[in-house]
Image 1 (cartoon, protein in one colour):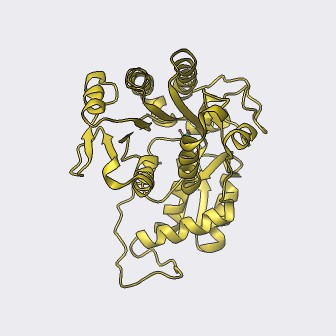
Image 2: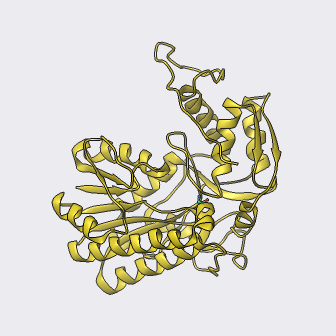
Image 3: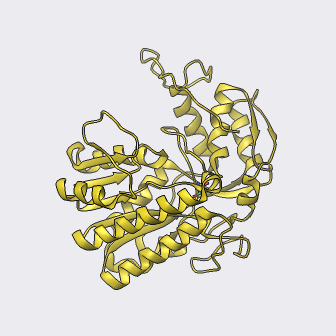
Amino acid sequence: MLLITGSQGQIGSDLVTALQNRYGVDQVLESGRRASDKNLYETLDVTNHQRFREIISAYKIDTIYHLAGILSAKGECYPERCWQVNIHGLKNVLELAKKYSLKVFWPSSIAVFGPHTPKQNTPQTTIEDPATMYGITKVTGELLCQYYAQRFGVDVRSVRFPGIISYQTLPGGGTTDFAVEMFYAALQQTHYTCFVRPDTRLPMMYMPDAIGAMLKLMSADAAALTVRSSYNLTAISFSAAELFAEIQKHVPTFTCDYCPDYRQAIADSWPSIIDDTQARQDWGWQPTYGLSAMVKDMLHQLAMRIEGSGFPVAGFDSAQPAKSLSIQISQ
Ligand code: SER
């Protein structure tokens, strides 16, 4: 049976469905800090080793997708908590993986890179000097993964995710969140004040590609995997202004201004375009969505979910009422 930590988060909520489709609804156990009335769900604080162990043993878990973590911007507000959750949570997972021979997926991030990392075509192995506590926990986490793989034979697999764009669940507390917020604003408010400069160019990825990457990496032949810290992974790189221009093609009334805050410095410390040759070679990684296809699909999917967006959606079944979402755009 599979366990997902942080299953109600941005990646978790999409991954649950993908894993249920692939392995069966009764094979996927969700967990998170918040209570839920879902059937296969356990409340779990990932820093609680004993509770973690009880769940793994009770459900005979053989694979963990360990997604629970605190992102970059929130991590700067709560650095101590960020270290606790990201490091002690992962350490618990790796210890339990060693004890119970579990297979593990854990997401690292472009946040492992810092001001001295080459910004263009960032190599797989390069300078990692993160400027955030989140980045520090990701570098440490990568080294822990590599150590547990080499020393104890733990089958842990990881990718350095860029900013993930999705419509199911909002990201929380990340620096790349502006890219998702811009879509909601385009359909709900017609204006967006972006918290990074228009020329801020970051690596991003549409959720279907992120899900595809996780499933593909986890089913790859272990012998083919040459990287046990974390694989560079890339899909699309665009600036905030380019994203706005692409959205505006579909929503001409949409306007945007820019008011950079503390997250600008975090964005400035990250690369613009990443070289993911190793992932392509080792396990056949290939993204599907470019900027225009991603924007088109995002607007279409979100318009179906946001009541009264007024956005014309081809093929939308009007007999099915759009779900009303309460969206909080953080500024
Ligand atoms: N999307 C993440 C963040 O912005 C990066 O991994 O924190």
